Length: 82
Image (cartoon, rainbow, N blue to C red; front, side):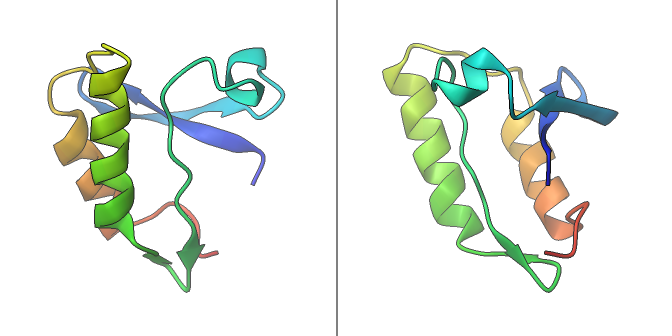
């Protein structure tokens, strides 16, 4: 995988990605979580989403409304198999 999926105000942005070479991504200048996917199923998704919520709150970062629901929806049908 060479990109991260981007969340917009109404859900994940189709065909959009953030290159892993992006400075903010490389140096952790944002709030993000990496979730492994095996055989089309996210591993420990609830734990990752809890940690993501807590990290955003600690950084005083306010994600767009509906982000958690959009992320949970994405996890029911991940865009990659592994």
